[in-house]
Length: 409
Ligand code: MN
Image 1 (cartoon, rainbow, N blue to C red):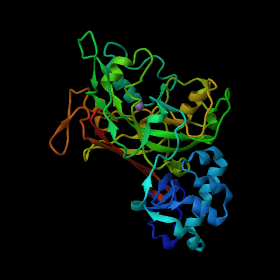
Image 2 (image 1 turned 120 degrees about the horizontal axis):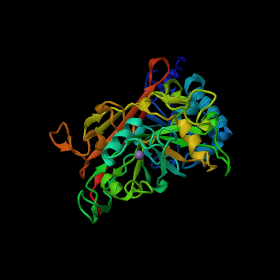
Image 3 (image 1 turned 90 degrees about the horizontal axis):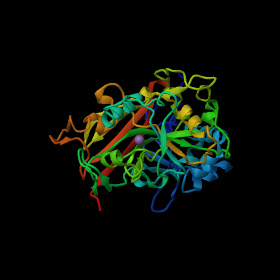
Image 4 (image 1 turned 30 degrees about the horizontal axis):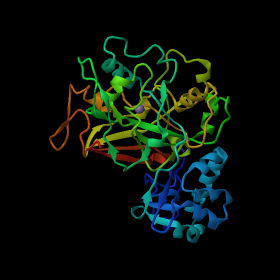
């Protein structure tokens, strides 16, 4: 376990704050007079990172004056490490008070934007428990896991342009659905709107067409994580997904948290995977054992915590997902985003979707206001929150992602 850094006393920042010096996540903020430009969260304040770097004469920090993280993501692993060292020095040494303090803004005074322009968006399916549950519910007459599931991290390409920042309302999608026992579909608003609690991985640096990212080199491209809610219309999905996979049942909106927590900040959260049997093919095995992440989630629906998923239950590692994504030579761009898939564990209270929690409506959830839910109603608000272990027993906060359902229009 590494030592925690001590914030400069003038910051008045407790060493165990979930957004302390060991975290320093990146986002994009604006106020009436500044931005939008890159922000770094420091406790309950936001650092105008570009202005701070300019003042300090840190030239590579010019990219922080941009309205998205993409130019910074393009700089690559060495620049990310240098940036982190710069920020930690500025925030721990008493010497820099005058250079930093003018560029700190209380969180309550800023608007937070989508932190990066999403290049390509892929969603994986890396939880064995989730895949098994979905198999049982969608294909009750066959084996719950498809024959490929333990040989490759299954994924599909989603819609990058409809990834939205936390707080954005989610419009109930309309589409085709076919009721059980009916021959023909009907058109209308989804009546089975659901969530998927996921972790999103933010990719930086670039690769050439035809280049593969080896599983041992994946960390060069894994910049950080966001909380991700893959809103899903189960009725639209069930009718459309055979044989090419999810399409309109998921492409209407995907919400992410405003703060990108870096992989460097999650160094203490690395854990072994639950175990892979059979052994995957060579390109998914590296020189080092693949790692998972110890991230603890809360899923809150209208103020009631309905689930506590654990990211460490996932079968495939983020490096394996990235190696698989590029094994055919597909190139990476700064701002690529991939979701882990719904995070579900063996226990019912760790399932990451309402479909699984209510077992397709057979076991509705009772909320603290006395109402019941199997799927989402108009006006419902869903919030995912998460944290991971940091140095010296402190917590690294991942913040939250929230969204409210508004009626179809
Ligand atoms: Mn998903």
